[in-house]
Amino acid sequence: MNETEYIIVELHGLNGDRVLVASAYRRPKGHCLADSFEVLSDVSESYSDVVIMGDLNSDLSATDVNEEGRDLEKLLERNSYHPVPFGPTHHQARLRSDPITGQ
Image (cartoon, rainbow, N blue to C red; front, side, top):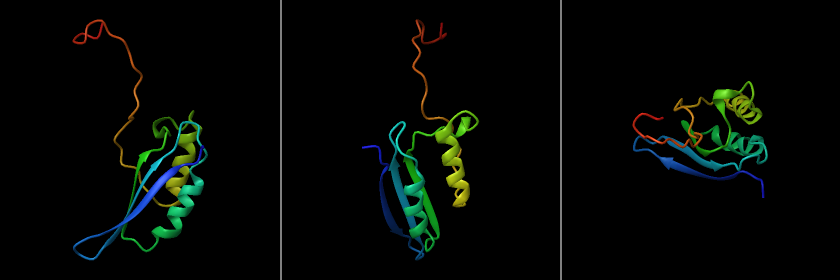
């Protein structure tokens, strides 16, 4: 199963605004996110805000060498979504002999 898994919920604010919140998980090397974004795009037009979160296994910081990152960047741009720049969330494990000096 390589399909993106997602859940979409609608939240109602005290001021009457409706917010669409989607949480998604795309396996490493899973299918393209385009189908998931198409579903989201179809339902998101009537919402004041859309929040997408989750683990999409796409590197937006290396779109020049990362195909998944490039695809996600195009999907975000096409739907007028803007990523929140938190930075990478996956880091390579490194064995250090001294946790203070890193050597």
